[in-house]
Length: 113
Image (cartoon, rainbow, N blue to C red; front, side, top):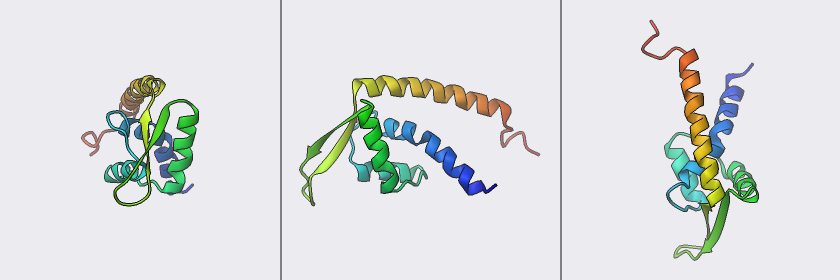
């Protein structure tokens, strides 16, 4: 089994949650979303994010608006819908529970000798 495959699956598993979290307080266009994820060391390519954003929009969790840009073509800004905000709240609760469970069964750095 290759570790890279498992690592990629772990990242994919939390990507939806991370994107919704990025949009929690501010609308953003794809380059901004990708930049925020990159800063957090979650390397995502455009080919991955566009289908995910479309899926989230089709599920009613995101909406978007077009906005003119001073440096190029108009930009599509994504935002959370009210349903998306509720969904994110539930995901946050689930993430907290999952994090607690994983921390309970895995040794912390302090415990290792």
